[in-house]
Amino acid sequence: MSALAPTLQAFFTHRLVQQRHASPHTIAAYRDAWRLLVRFAADHLAKAPSQLEIGDIDAPLVGHFLAHLEHDRANTVRTRNARLSAIHALFRYAALEHPEHAAVIARVLAIPRKRSPYRLVTFLADGEVDALLAAPDRTTWTGRRDHTLLALAIQTGLRASELIGLRRADLHLARGAYVNCLGKGRKQRITPLTRPLTAALRTWLAERNDIPDAPVFPTRSGQPLSRDALAQRLAKHVATAARACPSLGEKTVTPHTLRHTAAMRLLHAGVDTTVIALWLGHEHVDTTSIYIHADLALKERALARVAPASVHAGRYRPSDSLLDFLEGL
Image (tube, rainbow, N blue to C red):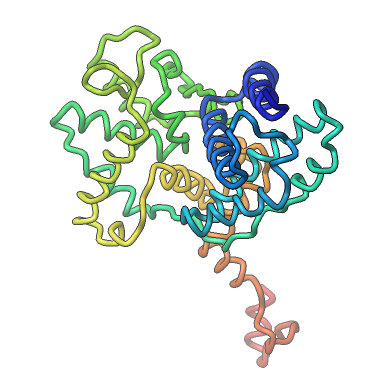
């Protein structure tokens, strides 16, 4: 085999799995990126994938591949940048293992991420949250499950993978109730629960007599919900809620929208952005600034504090002796 094949294998099995202890989602994303690139390079160079060399994956070829993603596969800029991150990750590893290819590797690592248009995050207003929580039919088992899941997502801001991966042992519903989850980047965090949500979770768990390792939100067969199932259930309830709250029909609501909603509710309550970052499990506090950009009410309050340019600072002086007397009391 050429240098590329064993390097790819070592990168996934040794670097990502053993050294980095990467999550299955990270491994799958990197795998998909390299599967696409290897096939593209093999077709472009008329070589078998197992015969590709590291030197074959040079900067011009990677550039053509990124253009192929955008123009031929109609991928977004974010997807293009995610594929490039996977390429950069392997080449940083290859730089240590194959210094003889340093020049090729350096040129690939120099390929920049592409800037994309900045879009404000979508979140739900209080009325929309109420309508969404009222949408599931709580006379049914699935309706009670979905209502509890939506309430937990909106209050805690858990990611979709964290929600569907919750086990009964992760919920601590005694005094000082909280949920414990292992989030993105293998970071463990605990999130407190309000009393109404704690009561709702107790009621939901009381319906089932499962072992501690059982999923909190299972399917009827007892298996954890999949991402697709979670998105499908959410879309169904959004369509129902839109009949009572038409503004919901104008928004694209995904499981991540509920996470944004939790962050915006904290921001509106005056919670500091550093605390919000810890609450959501953000690695960098700067990530939380997207919610400040989206908060029009916060900007309006800031604007109200700024005096108009035509108003000159001065001291009030009463124009009458009686008013002067009253002001002095």
